[in-house]
Structure formats: structure tokens, C-alpha cells
Amino acid sequence: MGKHTPLVQQLIDALRLLPSVGPKSAQRMAYQLLERNREGGMQLAQVLQQAMQKVGHCQQCRTFCEGQLCQICTHPVRGHSAVMCIVASAADLYAIEQTGLFAGRYFVLRGQLSPLDGIGPAELGLDQLAKQLAQGQVQEVILATNPTIEGDATAFYIAELCKKHQIQVSRLAQGMPVGGELEYVDGSTLSYAFSGRKPF
Amino acid sequence: MGKHTPLVQQLIDALRLLPSVGPKSAQRMAYQLLERNREGGMQLAQVLQQAMQKVGHCQQCRTFCEGQLCQICTHPVRGHSAVMCIVASAADLYAIEQTGLFAGRYFVLRGQLSPLDGIGPAELGLDQLAKQLAQGQVQEVILATNPTIEGDATAFYIAELCKKHQIQVSRLAQGMPVGGELEYVDGSTLSYAFSGRKPF
Image (cartoon, rainbow over all chains, first blue to last red; front, side, top):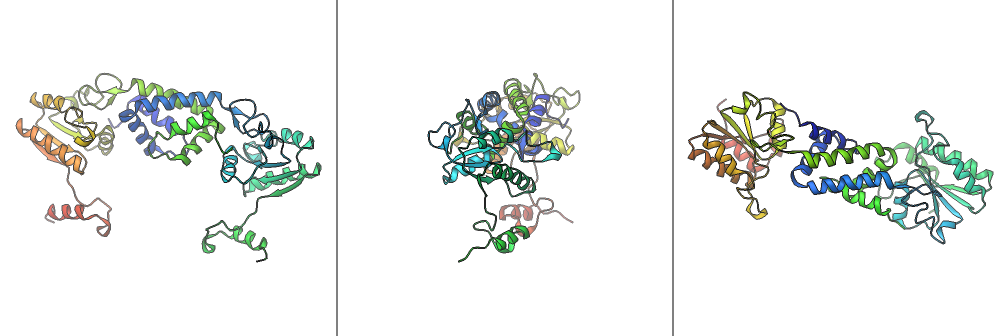
């Protein structure tokens, strides 16, 4: 008897598709929506459906976009900036935008090179990136891929591409995170922090 | 520029209707669905819509149910059991069913008395409960409302109702949780555990 009704079970299973939602949280979500907020549940269903169908990608920088080009690419200054920041995902772009310290254009890879997962240059739109770099407008590329094996490989690949077009290329600094404690920082980060030390 | 597109923002806002989903988690959920699992997002939307529209409540015990009566109320033995367990929510019913130690019928209040929030006897279906108790089939009631002020008030109210119909009534034991450590148990629980101590 210890079973949910079929639809409630289906709802719990579907909610588990969301990241970091386990069986207990999914049950709590399902029960709360059913018990207290059916209107909210209907609204979520509708918005989900619309977003899944209508949110596309910017034809220039590949970030999320509902039209052909995103806000940044259509910006009169930023869209033609000589500085391009290359990020792995739209979430990374958003994080950088939140700091407000970059005023150039972006290119969103929507992934990082990972041959074992079948993610090669084509999946990351690197041919599209190569075309944009060949146009000569971009003079500097900032690589903001993650400091992971995949991120390193991706950065290396793109750096080669940039050198071919004589474009200046740099990568985000690696070292101690602000507010971090030396005792708890991992060894690789510490060794980066040492080798990249700056005169005081 | 640090803005999501309108639909992405709407999706993030809608996901925040789920319990314990803050702005950061909602963004992660939205981005992950958009980037990697649009099919899953569509499926969730569809199931949500169906569940919100079609999951109703059992006419006898008020738990979630897709027809008129739930599995337990239509069970040849349990549906006519002389023992009734009264719980605050369908989630509580599910938790008790998971232990497998109760084989009687239920009554789901779908809330607890809380006059300040406008939850009175009518909202908890207590008139419906009174009718069922008056039929004479139920001979014992187990009160499984939460050990909170609202749960106490609700239990007290229903206990009075039971006494009127000469029905035996008990409430779940309060005391130390299994695996708990005395040092970290709160004072009220400890005082319940003391006053309810059992001969060894």
C-alpha cells in the first residue's frame, strides 16, 4: 500500500530530472504543489513548455537568446568589440556579467572538449569561432574556460587558433580564491599560486 | 547587460515556486534543462499539468487519489478497519505506510488547526471525520499529528470528538528519537522523555 498514485509517482519522477533533486525533495515538491499551490504548478508547467520551445541560441555568440542575436551582440559598442571572452556556458557568461568588469563580446562554447563524451570541436562551434576570428575584428581573446582537464584542453585548442590569426590571447589567472584559507586550499591550486606569485 | 532573456527569467522565477529552491538553484535548473535536457523539461511540464489537474482527494480519507476512493479505502479489510490513524498530511500517511507497521485506515486532515492562518475545523474536514466516527465502525483512533502547538491543538480537538462517541484514543509517543544523542536533544523533548520513562 505504501505507494503513490500513478500520477503523483510520475510527477515525483519528472521532478527528479532537475539537478540535485533526489527522491525525498522531489516528493516534498510534488506534495507541496498538489496540496498548496496547484496554480503555481500550472504556471511552472506553462513557462517550462514555452521556455523549452522558444529559447534558442544567439547566432553570433551562442548564448541563450529568444531572437536571432542576443542583447550583447546587438549592442552598438559591445557587439563589435575587439576583445572577446570565451566561456564554457551561458551560466559562466552570466557570472561574468554580474561582476560588471567586462565590456567586450563573448563566445559561448556550450561545453568543453571531451572526446570520451563525444564533445569535439564541432559541438563547441569552433568552426564558427574560427570564422569570427578570421574576420580580423577581434584583437584580443580572454579564455575563461574552467580550470579542469577539459577546460585546459579547450583553452589550448583555442589558443592555437588565435595564434594562427595573430590574436593576443590570455587565460584567467589561477591561484588562491579570495577569502580562502591556505590550509584548506588543494595542492594544485597552491602550486599555481606559488608559481604565479606577484611582487609585493 | 547582466540579465537573463525574458523567458529564461520567467522560468527561473517559476522554478522558485518549488520548496527550498532559491535563485541560484533555480538558475542552475533552468540552464541545465535548456542546455542539456529540453525533452526532460517538456516531459516535466506535461506531467506537472496533468497532475495539477487530475490528482484529487479520496472522498473517504482525503489523501491524494485519482479516482473517488484511494487504494487503502477500497481495500476489503483496511477500508473497514476498526482502527483509524489521523495524520496532518498525505506525506505523513506515506511515511507511516513506508514503515509497514499500521494496517488500519487513515484520515488525512490536510493541515492542522491554526486560527491565525484561517485554518479551522471546516478546512480540516472535521465535520466529515465526525460523521465517520458517528457511524460506529471505528473503535480506536491513533492521533499522529505533529508534536507542535498546532498539532497539539488539533489532537486535543479530535480527542474530544472521540470521547463523545466513546472511541478509544491515543497519541504517538514523544521522547528521544532513535539514534539521537541526549546532549543535542532539546529541553522539551528531554522533559517528555523523562516524564514518559518506562520500567526497564
